[in-house]
Length: 509
Image (cartoon, rainbow, N blue to C red; front, side, top):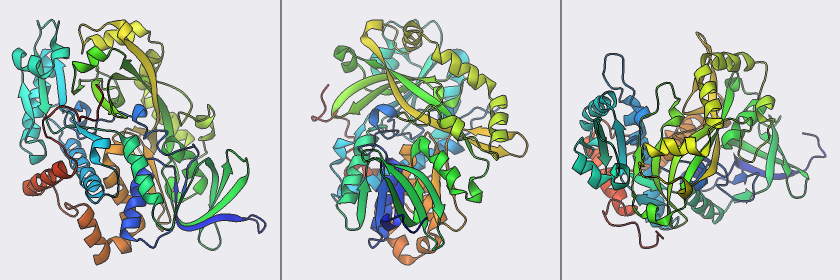
């Protein structure tokens, strides 16, 4: 930094991006260390305008209750349960933290952002029914999935899913599992509530229209950030001891600019999403569930179809998708040059190698991009046999940037998930990747704290506070059924869940 460059903000922590991840980390840090000063830099005009926005993500409250891509079937016919159990536990941890915030009135009422909506997996065909039964048997023995119900009975399935079953030709086997504990989460509303709480605290400043262009380590040990104010077009400067890059698809370019060795070899593959949104309120009234199916053979994990009840801004909605597409943008409101600009000497080979090993994904994205409205309706018809094309419209969801990593054997591999990249000295961390991100945000940010604040995380003070905010902290819900039971009882009360009533009276059907 040149001497003439005036530093606008100097703080202990800078959070880049005003999404669910930065909100979660910011609140955790201020609860654990109230003396910390925090600056948030966001390029748009408000929080949660990109991936955390309700229309830009699935909002399922990814808990692995119904997402079949988390339980892969092995060649010997056994079912992998590790990922499903991990995600289920991580979501319970998120609920504990949200329950703490709602219960202590740090944020708005839970009814504003989370609702009980049952989760279903629905399949047809002999092989898929066999898979679902084996999945049920494998998961049912764990407390996290104890309330999972399985049925192949047509009458039962009709009671569960009238819209899905009406008009269906059941000449082939069908089956479903049901989890009453499922939820719908409006991560946009939750994120904004957390930022309102943060901004009410001393030492926290949120700056919008700040497009971070560069960051480098200064001689004084601080990170120096340069941003462009999108309204005044002035260059501004910021300094902090610790930086978290939680800018969604914009994280990779900034991580590359940091030049930390740990960032070497990372690349990104952008994927856009689309939904069919129901416009017929009478149809919306007939469905109250999240119904996940099985992706077609050869399709990537992000293609798992679902017929999805959502509660957005107090209004019940119905979506089907996702339909994938390809763009070179890393953000919904980004630049078509994002992908090209992300190419560097150390990630070109991993990215090319990952591309060569994922030609089916390229083919899939092309096929999705050229689909007609009737093609999309045909896919929906498998879940809603009596669908009428005119009742549905196409809406564009958010951008996702899948992680590409170096690999000794493959050269480069495409990862479907989230990845924390942290500097060895703990002064900087970045979050890359996509689903199940938002739903597991608390566990992911606990990982950031462990990587970047190891001394503090081992202190009695921090451990005690974490236990207050997250009662299961340091214990395993998977291995200790009683911990899981107590956690769910507490969060059900604090978040007003599982009351088996209609959607809240505040929701417009």
